[in-house]
Image 1 (spheres, one colour):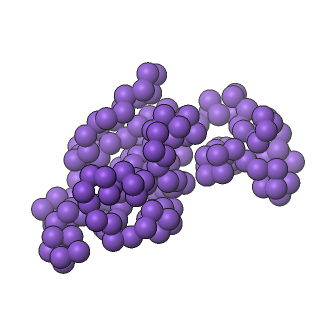
Image 2 (cartoon, rainbow, N blue to C red):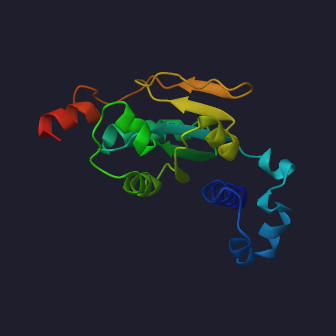
Length: 175
């Protein structure tokens, strides 16, 4: 199972495993993949794991984010976190403290996260890349994606939203 999780996360991170990465894999790992320009888990292998998708801005990373991602991980074997695209956030009138690349790197280091990726301008491309079995929303997130055949989960648990919300932290420190 651990090998499948690793290969799935690698496939999503690279948007298909590159030939260069493939060359470093063990013989056993290579047998689990099929080639289609790049390498992907064979369907029977992919069916053995559940991929979860969560997302957010993660500009001011705090304990509420970590708690939410830990809760999300309970619903899947591989947790993929999509970090919102800078242009999308700026379009909504927000000023970002950190770049998209920085935010992806921060989220990628979190224990419950198997792989963090940048959000696409077209969410359908992200869904096609990740192929999630479940999309997990935080307690305060609006459900805006409901692709067919993908389970939707809205988390109910949270930690002190009056204290740990990015908007409150930004306002408090005048960022």
